Image (cartoon, rainbow, N blue to C red; front, top):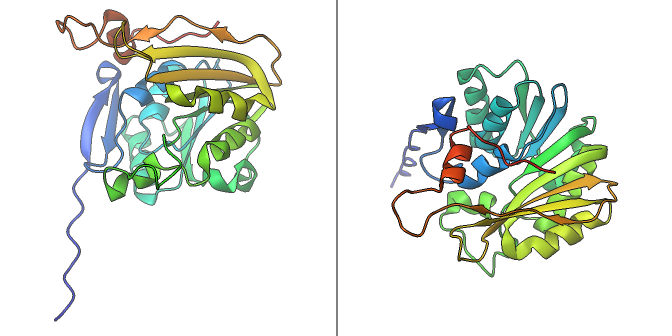
Length: 255
């Protein structure tokens, strides 16, 4: 019996971000940029002329949104999945951002030095949420790389610390229950932590945290006011504050 041909890959979908200012083509199946990417982009505080790197940029959801929010900064995205990388390059052209945003192949576990790049002013990441494949199975094989960090969270914090200059900033969005691990992983060479909890509802525990650290920073840790995503009354999908952020009308500022 002759081998059966592989099923055709589903065509990418096209979505609009920041109230239609960003067009994102991304896989119909597998990892898709969502709320976490939008919040990470809103927390990017790069000044004009600064260089920003995103580790694990996927198809470019956070990268494109951050670059659109910060038109004076220069961005580089690193991605190891060839399909996601190809879509990211397509999205750069589609959004007219190829003049100051680039993407290239790279593996976080191999370390920043392997990229041959100069340190950046700021680094962004939405690391895979899990690092023990025995504890959790990804919901689909095509999502495994996005859900499972092969080198653990330590590989990501180590990469990000090496990726920025002294005084550079690292911004991460992750599960709230991994906050201690984030602070521990970054704390050896970074400080001046600022932590913003992200709550699904005002009366519910935080599910996400945005963490910003400064390499060689010495200021005390600051716990910032939380972002509440949804109202309990169900009248609107998002709170006015969250809706303004998603539409690109507001940022998630740092002190």
